[in-house]
Length: 94
Image 1 (cartoon, rainbow, N blue to C red):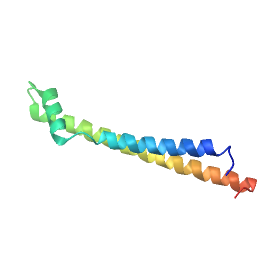
Image 2: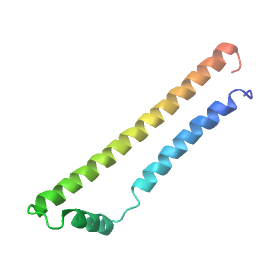
Image 3: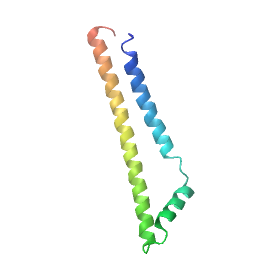
Image 4: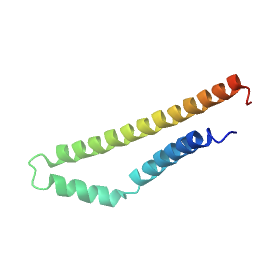
């Protein structure tokens, strides 16, 4: 491996690590904390049950979006590595 490829590999590893940390932090809220926040947001609402359901829907949607972002990041990292290997192969470094 040449020195010119190390920054690219480091960037890919950093991107993958960052997405994993973001996913881990997104899941660090307990069910009690979520319920408390939802109750505070819906307090005094005439349609308390509908409000609580809407809060859960938004949280589920956000979690799905975070998972999709992580999937896209990992796919981009794999594609970057594939391209790096292809470049090396064409140069005769492999």
